[in-house]
Image (spheres, rainbow, N blue to C red):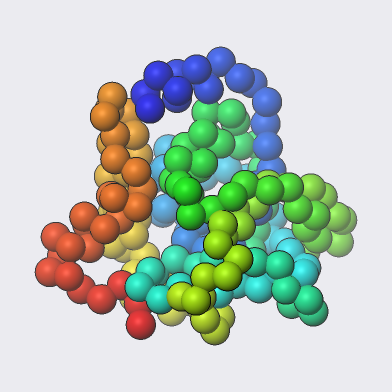
Length: 177
């Protein structure tokens, strides 16, 4: 993966990325990207943010008459996009979406990570960022930093493996209901 990351470093395109879960937390973004990009609060219409049984992070899927609040990270470089792709892993698919920026009411296109399994029976309810921030953010930021450090190694683990090993080391503490 380190070779792929080095290859991605050759790109100079910048991207907007809509985030709606753990990446709303500056501590997690800083752990992954080593900086906090400029951002704008935004709404993604036509999607719902679900909780996932056994996970502390959310999933979004298309849903009529629903909307997801989040923010758009501006100026994400190709190497940073590679890190986010690896972080989101195979559970998510990167797609282009139209979002409404809340600070100026403009619409813009952004990349977003949508849950890959549209029929996942583990999706339920609505994920709550404030609850996550109070109960999970500190550990999740540590896991994110470990993932980022490991990503630079020739034989790096996936984010799912990093996530599961961290929480198993922590005495198998429940991740979410």
